[in-house]
Length: 379
Image (tube, rainbow, N blue to C red):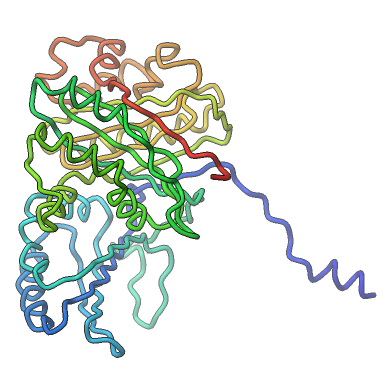
């Protein structure tokens, strides 16, 4: 009887999916949470700055509502929550120069912040509007792999590309272990003309990992060495200067998919898609939808794909079997010539003027690899 009872009460084994995906393009509502640590005695200054900013945010397309809360245990701890119709309008705003200028008055009275973004999956409560009333919820939860993907991008002065590439290709990697719960998994650097893209993969806390990397002497030395070549000036010894630089350099991942089949020997490549003015998000969405479809095709050479987007800068990081030339269309993120034509319409006209066909577009987008470093699983 005991054995039978144990068998009956044991939870059923659920099948697990090997598909990993994350995306901002679900169309569901977004909840943004900002944890703020206000400097002692600056609460009133912070409140006034928030009220001024709140009036401006209310007019941003896609914004629904927000709340400002103060801790009942520690008056220096504040919480700002906001709701958005979907993720794309929020990202378009938070990554804009308008946002950089808007939040500047707040930073003089803030010690630290932490931003969290969530799709709304389910909702309960009396009087809760139904999704059909224009408040869409995420239909199904996505399956993750515990890895956070992020990128930074910046430009260097024309003529300095070779020197910057040399500096970024020859640096000592920081220790992958950050703390008991956070570690660096992989760092990949690429260049396209005078644009640098550094993509990182982290398990644990992204912000903690970024701060850990920034403090490492070997990384700090390289950052100081490339300072004279940057188009945007920065002073890493000035907290505000560094904050503004890295805010502008942030290139968030808007979509990632890992197909069911794994291939650790796949080659890593990066593609840069210069979008027409105002078309960056639409271009990223097109690439994301094609990558989702390609992940269902066992014959696709693309094992993993991550799309990064900020304003009109779109970068696609891919792990490919057999190299990119074996299937140029798949590597580029298009299924056929018709999709290549659609892609061309979303790209900057001047950039594609001299590049015809899929092979030409692949040549236009291909980035120069500088370094790709993976941490050992047991490091």
